[in-house]
Each structure stands twice: as C-alpha cells, then as structure tokens.
Amino acid sequence: ETNANSYTDTAISNGDSTAEPQYKGIKYSWYSEDTANYAWANSDSTVTAMSWNTNYASAKVIIRLRNGNHSQVSEVLVTLDSSNNIHMTEYAIVTTNGSLGDVTAIVLGSDILLKVTPTYATGTDVAVKGSSVLWAD
Image (cartoon, rainbow, N blue to C red):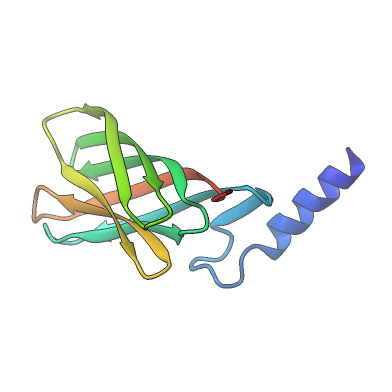
C-alpha cells in the first residue's frame, strides 16, 4: 500500500509535462490510461475533443456537450485493428433537448482523434473523459 501511495503521489505531482494543460492523464499501469480533456467549439465546425496514441488502441469515452441550458452525454467505444482501421460505436446518447452534436473517430499518423461536430454555431462546451487500453498482441 505504501508503494502504491508513493507511486500515485509521484504521478500526480509530476503529471505529464507534454500534456496541455499539465496533469490531464495519469497512467495507472503499463496497459491502460485514463484521460480527460475540455474543448470549446465556438462555431458548428468540428473540433478534436481528445486524442491518444494508437498504442492504446481501444477506449471507452464519455463526451458531454453543453450549449446554453441544454446538455448531451454520449458514450462511445473505439477500437483499432493492426491495419489502422478504426471502428466506433456510440451506444448511449442522452439529451435534454435534441442532439447537440455528432461524434466521430479517425486515425491521423500515430494518433486516434475523437472529433465532435456541434449542431449549433453559438458555441458549445465539450468535456471528455476516457479510459484506453494498450494494444497487446
């Protein structure tokens, strides 16, 4: 327990110096990573809500969109095969007043990008939290 507490304290205090903002991801072990991100979509154009390395080929992600008084939460599963074919299923969507946006996933170089295209051009908050799993053959 002492070793686990020390590891966690070090991970939190050191953070990920390459992340922006710092401390957005904590690696719990060599095979998985929990991450979170925030994006502001100031129009109805597509934004990258989150990205992660293709080494972590599968993820479960929750995306919250907020526009004015309305909210949408989507839950997606994303997976990648060894040929970089990406597949995404949006299996849960809850809204307070119709769809606030669409979620897609693409591969760009060595990264998986989770994209959100808001429905409205009036500005939308996009908050994302996910858990990814390391590719293992």
